[in-house]
Amino acid sequence: MANVLLGVTGCIAAYKAALILRELQEMGHDVQVVMTRHAAEFVGPITFEALSGRKVWMEMFGHATEGGIEHIEVARRSDLFLVAPATANVLAKFAAGVADDFLSTVQLSATCPIIVAPAMNVEMWRHPATQENLEKLKQRGVHIVYPESGYLACGVTGEGRLAEVNAIVEAVRSVLDRSTELAGRRFVVTAGPTCEEIDPVRFLTNRSSGKMGYALARRAVSRGASVILISGPTRLEPPAGVEFVPVRTAREMQQQVYRHFPDADVLIMAAAVGDYAVDANPQKIKRQETLTLSLKMTEDILAGLPPRDRQIVVGFAVESENMAENAVAKLRHKHLDLMVANDVAAFASDFNRVLLLSRDGNRTELDLMLKTEVAERILDEVAALVQARVGAPR
Ligand code: CTP
Picture 1 (tube, rainbow, N blue to C red):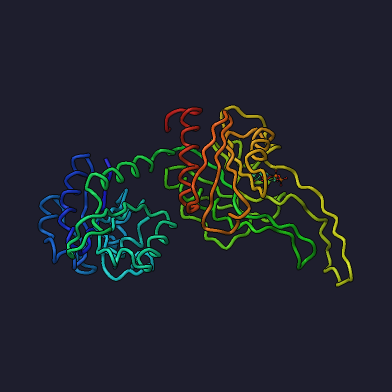
Picture 2: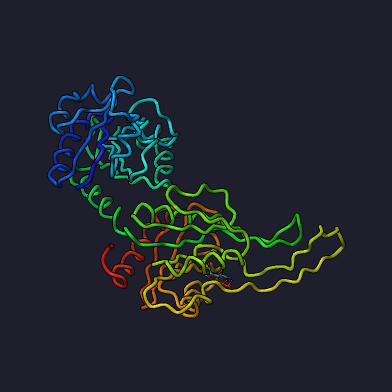
């Protein structure tokens, strides 16, 4: 089964990590424990060594591995990194990218899915710093198993108690299942705005930030898909593991989509493709009282795709009024399998509230949530469509 890296940090619930370890072994996983020094004040490493049958990692220096850099090797070998319990301090370090001990250094070098199960006193849990750190981690795609309300070690009752072992183990199961769900599937995702030159210094563009498309590309990679991300200019870093194709104009985006579409199982057009292009002036246009630009409609990339029976095509509709009706009309006109309708307010925001419309008439209205979470929900729908249309994972 999977190689699970279990991180244990210093809190009274550290002993529960031993129960989690046992459950993960029951599921057939190989568990490697890494703990902080503070955690070792609560439960000795020898407990975890005896249960896991493996040496526990704690110190940065002093252990020679077989020719590799320890924390990199440990991160590379793991299919999933679960930190349970996760203290407020370790969440803050993860959020800030601090790497001052073995566990936090492994986190920074891990490319596998990460789950954290926080546990702390209620005031620490409610502190804005802790909540902001959690938001940051969520945006990066870290999965959170939220603590429960109950009697806490500090003697009060409130939120902060480590989630039940079952809930944590269930989260591991579902994240691991997802991590291979799209294995062998080829995705093309478009993102960001396009830009049309007016003259050598001016251009027409729109407010798209690219966040939705980049989140989709990142999450598709973490579900095992191979992903080509065709992106207009954005401020974002291409997610690790994607094949990145930068473009500028609507025409360039069209060329790249048409080039890669024939080999794709899924196309997700999250890009805000400009609807108009200008005949670019080779010289800088001089300042003048009034300037008339003549705009020409660009070609509709989705509407111009060849007929298909196997491939899944997902579009986005940005509307400022009559969202559902307009989105349904676009779904039909562009022969889409799934349409994600959103309000113009979502542009540039980290949050989005969308309506998912499928070709067979299903409507799912999602609450306002982070774009990373919206991406997961869209991919749940896409994975179901792929499964129904193309069959089981290759
Ligand atoms: N799209 C496209 N080619 C274009 C314009 C848009 O493929 N030239 C795609 C977008 O990527 C999106 C979908 O079509 O997935 C809908 O885009 P949207 O801007 O909402 O709709 P338009 O078709 O441009 O219609 P309108 O601007 O009139 O609402």
